[in-house]
Length: 353
Image (cartoon, rainbow, N blue to C red):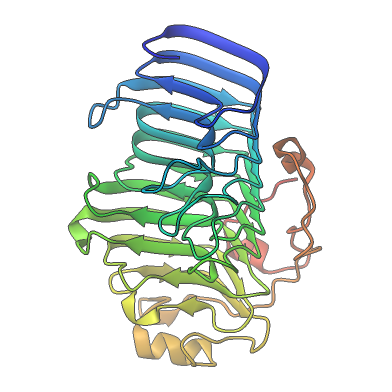
């Protein structure tokens, strides 16, 4: 679909293409609904525009599924095998979509695919979506659930569920050469046991290969549940310089140490989060007490008081997500807190039901 306007496509199955199953390029006022894009090469669904122009705009992608799009065998220089990817675009809503088992045959080692993501885009909302068991090539990067990547501005990922992706469930990324990344929000999402294969080794991953905090700034991350019984909750790459990334009112659960790359957190702010290590109760960078970590770093402190929490969250059924469609998110209850939990009053948390 190239240079089109005011087009709606409903209830279509697309498979067998080396490139994207569905490609929308330099088009406006496009609606894609109930599309099952599977067994294609580079992606299930791709939205694109001319470089630097964001001239695909006003796009709605709803009730779509991207499954088993393994990778483009001829692409030896860049990522392939994405579920749904949107770039060089503006005003895009991705709603109640599912991405799974993509990216497993990307024919290279390097930057990799993601289930549902955006780059060089403005005003993108990804919501009520499910991204699970997405993959990358052996030795390749990424393979995550959701991502606002290089050059994304004024965008939101909210009310989404991610689990058992080889890369992190939620990626906060800026690549070298991209336009500045800023004014983005990740809120009310769930990650379970993501990031166990690729280099992140955590449910949420921060990376900035521009090496410039002025290119990567202003992000709020709140109301999320990051649960990981395999690896850490959060990872900061060796390249993660940033300005104004704020984590507040989240629950972070990790196998042992809760944060990887602690020496790179720099300007990152934490306020009112709950931290729980399944092995140690609390462990960040070898520090086994919340108060000791606060005293050392100044994080989780306000007006001289400790505002972070170290409370076992007692979720209803953690570590056992088995939903397979975004349509099931509305009835998903695994991460409900017990009625008597004090966390419900202290944190602004996602309650899916």
